[in-house]
Length: 604
Image (cartoon, rainbow, N blue to C red; front, side, top):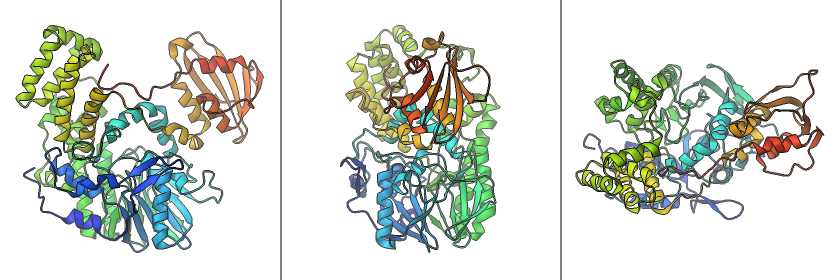
């Protein structure tokens, strides 16, 4: 930490600038009185950094925990600290445009109410989703009714809905489970436990929703006027999200950088799981944003953290962010072309001194180590070229063999303790992980591994590393905490029929369905669509139905909501109309597997 200037208070000044009022108390409940957001629990961060936290991460968490309504510039306001992300509000001729309605509906409604309490009861006249991650659209129904009866324009980058679904529904169960580790969901808030994620404090646990966009932004330079406010867009696919965009308000001299530039090093691949991002194009879009917008901006704000004011400061911030992602990309490629693997590159790479000293380039959310491995993965995949790694045993089988070679579980635990006492916590964790996977009932191995994870977590500068280590320790000691997140059902209204069929296809138990042969025609009354579904060879496929051809085994007429209920078992489908062999529905649903939202991570 010696190269970091802890006397530099510029970020604190910027984070406090424009403060109007906070939500008091800083707690949000759902309709049943369940607390879905509590920012007050982080009040301990007002104190000095304890020995149980990395001082740099503690500083970042102090900044992220600031909560309230802030004036960014004339006509632009932000609510920060009411969820993982920010809500930005831009005042138009007759109402207000909401940018990024947080993770869930209850905090979004509270944020809008806080704004209205100080700026008047302005109607929502537009909404913008900056990108396809749930913390930027999940609270939509806290801002607008689900069916958007007034036809309020909702703008999003092209491909938004497809990618929102693929990330949060297709692999949603696994991502939500790992997301508990990512955000430290089950950890006590306090100096020894969860202190933040680096990107924000944590995610709310309210009602997740998705109101589909009404207008796609398809190209850089596209201009739209919403409630009298001119907006110029820059599309940035493949950066922080597969569908993302920056945009400029030329009359307000304000620039929204979405999540492409934030006050930390972001993720090339998140620890919770996602598509690997392209650091090369990320850097190029940041460079393009400087050229397009920097000179015409007095303030730059984003979907997280605090704004940057002044054209010179904006240009410096964005170019340093550009250079950060470009450097990680290019140096990883340079070293992999010299034969180094991802872990080897991660051990060797060093940031240039100017970037290493920049607070906004620190790895609070995405570390240099795991980002380098992600760049390697994007180009080279999971295999490092060593034949010994081509057909290894799965973790539990491999662990049993290692532990046998080392003389049994007790011997491994003893040896790991020696490494831990010598300060090599990384190898102690490796040894103890083998011990636990070889003998998951061994209390001594689990206890020792939990202790090592705790030490690693409390020393980590990266918020998500800290949360992963401490969640692992908690799970080893206390068992699995049930997953409170359920994104898929709340997003159902925003899914197309094709996406509902795709989400069913990834649930088919292949071996169980090997010998099934069936076809179903679906007639969806509220959208006027007709689809034919086929189950054969354990694969569920679908296409738009055409007139003529062989008859299906079953024809089903229903609404899209009933389709969701039928495929998920989430509601009453007694009124669904069918023609043909109704038993086909039972045969179909019988081969759909139920995902496990609470699968083990630190034990086999």
